[in-house]
Image (cartoon, rainbow over all chains, first blue to last red; front, side, top):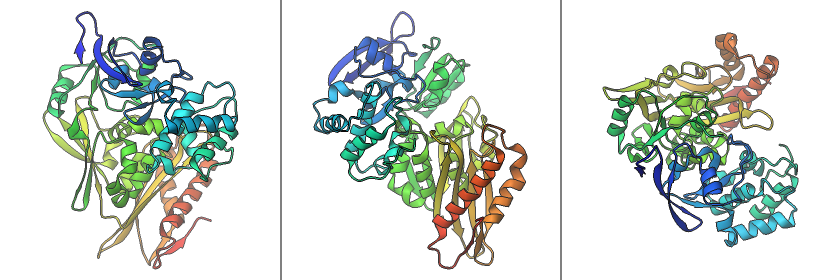
Length: 169
Length: 286
């Protein structure tokens, strides 16, 4: 990473959905703004801007992160996956099918973040996160219109008979 | 909303980092940044430079050294909850790490970030206190190891000053068993109380180290000595309340609710941890 001659902008390299980018960014720029405003990736939604709602969740180096809570410079040299880059992945395809079959969306605003969460859990089945009840998995993702019942159904459909089916949130 | 302009630098190693901290007067260290970034975004803190330590490999390790488990500052909460050594030697910490915030936050948040931000509702301090942890700090001039009880000052302050960093955390790895429980607010990941315990047995004495965080303004430690092969949860409750009742923060959760809740939490933690322990009689708050 290097300083640009004028101002504080930094040069970063980043791979997003398989495409390699070299860009100059201000250190104060958030990853979500880089993805949406500079790279035009619109499945990454801004729902709260305070790391609460999870609508901006993306996969960064195989970790699920809230892109509104990461500076773009921190993501230098990393590999980012969003719904656009995962839509043909079999695990994501199956997650999307389950969301459709369970009617697990209403306005759809939280759906990309929810799908990325489900994809992350399915990709990391042996992790401590995958051992959680579904309700606990969903703590970082807020849906403001479905009441979660159908989202939990979709998660159950994908993850098998795990606990957490009640609408206790 | 964009925060004000800041610079961003990456030190090569710890030495480099410490000299950077000494050369800037208004810098902040960032690793996962899951607490700090929110403060920066909302312009709640003023800074000129972010020093990103997440790429310093010397800060990312887990080492078992005899009866001591040493965890590097940059280990994320996700890595802690998945680490087999930590799960077997310090189960309370692995469980506490898994209870923090949400999956996304745990992916990046680090153990040092969690304890240094010292936000009142932290879960990790309870496990560190129960496991009688030391916090290992380093500055340009010296390295220092502080007992975790000394490290936490109040809800927002620790004994980690501007030009020093937490390098690692050392825990006792010789507890016979340890456990952790969290009671959280409805519809939130925020704790009403986080509580951990660890059983230590020797030829001289057997005792339970208990750490409590989120409940009080400052995490507390209680040493409960096991007499007559019994554990009396009522004594643990009374000890907690007698020592710290005066400093409970008055928030929107009524004190009477808090008191009832803590009794249940103590009972559950004791029962879950020791119900299969044949020689121990358990007396609960009921």
